[in-house]
Amino acid sequence: MGNNSSSTGPTCQIITEKERGGPIFIVLEDIAGNRTETIKLSASKSSVTPSNVQLREKVKELEIWSEGKGDTFVDTVKISSLSDVELYTFPVQRWLKPGPGKRLFIPPFNCCLPQNDPHPGQRRRELNDKKKDFQMTSLADGCPVQVAGSPRQAMWAQEYKKTYFNIRDRCKSDELLLRLTQWGQVKQLSHFADLYELGFKVPQGIENWWFDKMFGQQRLQGLVPNLIKLCKEIPASLNVTEEMVKDVLKDVSLKQAIQDKRLYLTDLTMLKGVKCIDGNVLCAPMALFFVDDEGDLMPIAIQLFPDELKAVQVFLPTDPPYTWLLVKMWYNLAEASWHLACANFGFSRLAMESVALCAHRNLSVSHPVSRLLAPHFNQLIPANRETLRMLDPGQWMDETTRIGRDGFIDILQRGWKSHWRMNVEGNLPRDLENREVDDTTALPNYHYRDDALPIWYAIEKYTRSVLKAHYGKIKLLRR
Image 1 (cartoon, one colour):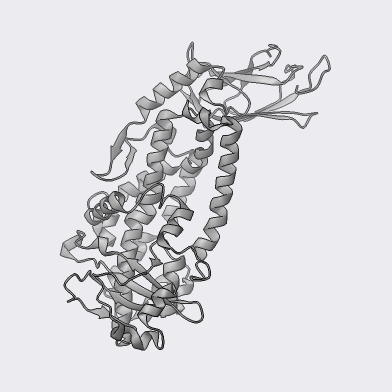
Image 2 (image 1 turned 180 degrees about the vertical axis):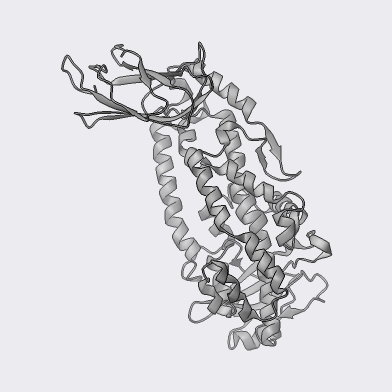
């Protein structure tokens, strides 16, 4: 096998990674047209070592089929010589259907553009089948498009399914909710630490979460680190004046802070009027932050609702301590609601499912772009289905959150309509530039920016190199 030029090829080992189903069969063909005899891969064994694999040239392709009663999913077939380091990998990653005319032909590594595919008919048939399997739907009007139903290509792999449900069962969320119900209302902040005696680790932030410095750090490295933006002028709906914050800024004026790029803003006014459970109200806050002499981002004003009429109170660090603390907690509740519906689920997982849906319907498994995206699709759709089950009426979202199912969908619709664009929010350098937080000197300790950018550029460099290797020149992209 491989480059071995002897009359008798060396024995090789064949390793198959597959789900379950009937036995599968393979034939190998080299670039000179020589073919092996049919090799049966047992349904109960993942590795066989046949002695009749004798190919003198490089392997051209793998022919694979199933003769079981039902369909069989095969992930990867690996062929390694016992006397040679050369390894052939055939990423099948398809369901094998028994019956005549169902054989598949897979080249090593199976990655090519449509115009270079030696089996274009097979490619077209697979795409047509996937378009039938992957239909479109959405959670509600104005939400990202998602996959309708549960195509088997998008169901849990057995090892992931087992791990997921084991972790879920260990969370003991029902027990925690039961304890909360038994204890009644928590009347002291210090009692929250007692809730973690059920098996959860006590979070480090429980010792200092109420400090203003920590509140500022949450905007830079917390759940939603991409809301903060440079404040170049005080918004008309934010009722903050120079006189109001002079004791907080001390010897720095608002005008000077703006000129020196030391004033930053978060704006959640898009949450105004969001539907909530039992007539509850969700704040739609704006918060103003100042980079102090130590480089820490400190809150200097919070307004819980937009104030077009200049009649809504602005809260300050100089207010009574518990008033200021409660205001920060109400702000965090609003930001956490935005994170739950948009930052976490809508803009990342559900948006990525839209990409997965498009890729499944239009790209062959063999396409280079499909190969690049495949790791990001891994278990994405079944994981999203578990989240959607929590959105069912009367389930987790209604039982444990202020916004409930209706508020969740309301926030997602608002965010998807006007607060996420692929070429801005979906592009990290442009997003940082758009929010004007790319200046590391003006805004230090922004670890989300500093840690994410090298990763983003590494992915971009790798992606460009792969695409360039396949497309070569830009004109090929237009074909």
